[in-house]
Length: 561
Image 1 (spheres, helix red, strand yellow):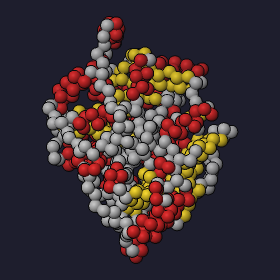
Image 2 (cartoon, helix red, strand yellow):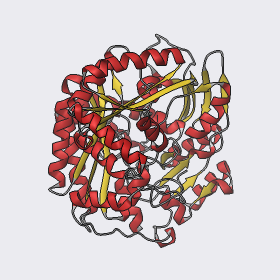
Image 3 (cartoon, helix red, strand yellow):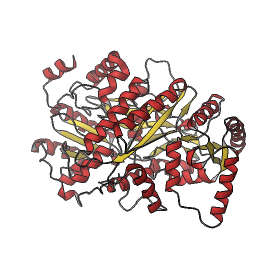
Image 4 (cartoon, one colour):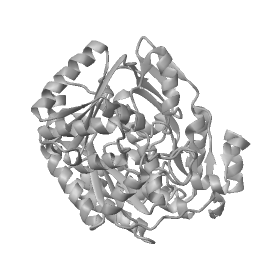
């Protein structure tokens, strides 16, 4: 689990700015002056209301997980009541935990998970599955009026069983990314799933949110890697068959994938694996503009090429990346001047161009063949090669960006991300519309940047980052204004409400605009059938008020009917 309660990642790790003065000068030129943000020095300063769980219930919970497996301690409850979104961090830094969980249980077996869920259903206690705690959309914050039990699934990590013949592995839901790869790699396999939260997030969390790794253009999103799973839900346990494909009605794996804990708790999954790539070729390319790069990306994937990474930054994000690198010295400065001259001959300037990181991996012959085919396509779109250095730099720093957010929050800067996806015919119009909506909501002092990071034959994702000076004492309202403007632009333009962050509580108000009334009714009907008491992660995914977990069966029936 993340150890830094007020930010991202490990407490002893910080983002390294090679030239801080240069970076802050760049930022202040765009945002103007900002007021340094403060934070409380200890979780001991957080004062929560007492746990609402009766002594008899706490005793029953302890009977399932043991004395060491249950906590009602205030600081611990505070940490498990929030994820790592901007809104979460603003509040926890002030010591504000408006909706604390009442207890944290640490089940170590599937049997314990099942017993906890059944007890909670009987006593109308809301249950929130908690993996790595990396949700950025309000996915783990309690909602509703009744008592809440959070299940810390980190202890549900009992090994990885590899089936080499089938290239599959059966994995407990609490296994983290690094832990999984440490098991797979010596056997010659990888899952190929590397989200930015890789170091802390869990297999169960990935499936529950339909996570996308940074190499998903090659390996696919997590739901494509799941062969089978097990789900503990109120009154039962679902175990789907481990088969490569079937024609046996709607796919129950895909029903559970993306359910965000609203149907039950994922306890185990069988995952499709890939061989460890023996060769990699990652390079940087510069395009005259974002439109040129998008056209090249579309042609690459529609030509049948399968890069592991195809990441295209727009002009603003490219400029920002340049501002964070160290100024070249000595021979590096000579090389950069020569490079600028070379690029200028093709009409390109580093400050106004767009950077693409393009990486292929696999067998050496296939990588060489695909890289050569890609270069031919890129030349037709006026790309200029920057060599392997940008690719190596991206690989080294690909998990670092959330640490930069902590630094910016300390400096009084609002910074957050949001993402969507759409088809190629609407891609540029949606990109521009959402960018302008965010700019309008930010006002004159703001930065909006974006990149394409997941490509399909029929479309791609757009991942936005926005920054602005925090409005002191109005930080949450400011963020909500920007978030609403961006999300409404996405739904108007026909984009995905989320490509890989999930819905949580932050996006659920727009679910009907996205799915239509019939789609929302279907989701509500499925939840009502599997969770009639409304105890599984209420207030997430499905629009409408969350069912109070302690409502009577008659109330529940009336509300869900």
